Image 1 (tube, one colour):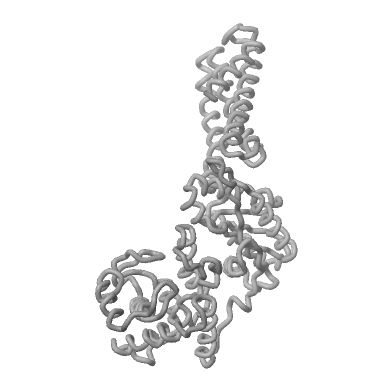
Image 2 (cartoon, rainbow, N blue to C red):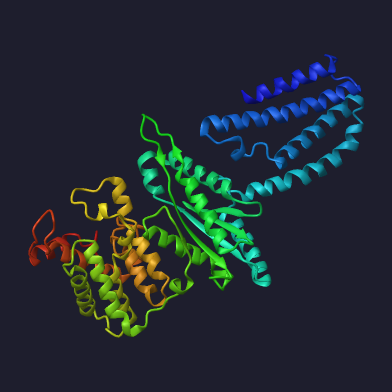
Length: 466
């Protein structure tokens, strides 16, 4: 329908200017053809913009239907086609002279357009992760050579998975597109934005100091917080928030190659702070290393803090740790081995990711909703991401990530099965289940050791390693 309207508009212009003379060899026809081509381009872009505005609420400015590069390419190609039509009316032999320059000009105009499309994320229109990484590497090389201040901002859309599960992926896509528009509106000339994947966005801000980068990130966060996606059936519009992290070179991040990493760590601090905020990278904290001698006391203190946040200060974490180590010893794991150390540290910190989970979910006595359960399941990945940044906790981080996996592949977060699950995680799962069964819970009393063994054996080969 839109194409037909475009053709009719172009025909009307041609008819009025050419005076209904048809395709004859005259200057009136040449002028009418050019104006008809321009009319086709203009009405086509207007119709596309209207469709995007009516269907998705995307403004003409954000859809960039009148971007100069697109208009120039379409207009030039149509004028070339019109010129060939005029050549045909004058003499078919003129086509031979016009085809070669036409093809060359078409390639010169169209190939860059195709390249730009390949660099753009199909869903948001921002740069792809690969293209962003290429430009980031180029810019950081320049920044390091000239010591010019440069900033990277990471932005993570909060709870997109819950939105997808509750309202469907169409609404989730609308949220992603709206966030991309909010990011575009916050950019300055020369700034670069890309989508790294999922709900993660990244911004490259050349020649930008820390204060300016933080202010820009905050303006984008506030713009995103104003987003309201309409929902069917009169439901409240879907609101959106983003957690952002800012890292700048050379102060405080002295190594430009680590800017993205530090910005990513700052995002996780924003998540831990309750989401919908912006955090600044602190390299000294991100790269901290715990002295070996202080491990046990530090980890036990964290374990008590986790117990207090979860189910009360009942020493559950220390009990499960002792059980897991006892099982490991029975299986012949040496106390001097790396496997033993990884298991001990992972057992003490297995629920560290729960610091990022809402208290209303952790303390809820009744069954969790589907949305709440999806959020709760994230704590394994969050804990893994927190711990893997510390070199001496990398092995423990893998156990923490996998401690809710099931032997038959029905667990989370990755659905690992069998030997794909780290042995430490399989050992911990048995110890954790045994303590849970033999401890008092809000909804039932503790059961005997014999019952616990019986229940665990019944799940051998499914939930637990046989």
